[in-house]
Image (cartoon, rainbow, N blue to C red):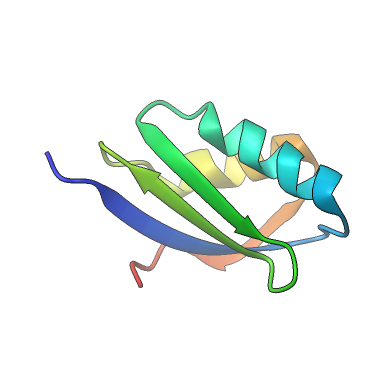
Length: 75
């Protein structure tokens, strides 16, 4: 199965610790192979080798203490 990449926007991140927290939580979702977080824009790109639900990403972002405001669209 080919890799899938989906993009999200997360609010509330203000520093590299925030980026690390979001990256760590989202990386724990089964199937996720890479997480790229851009602090300046709040963009989070999630690459996976299996389908990952938007709800799973939202829950991981919530667990990290931030809010997913939009996303799921493949760029």
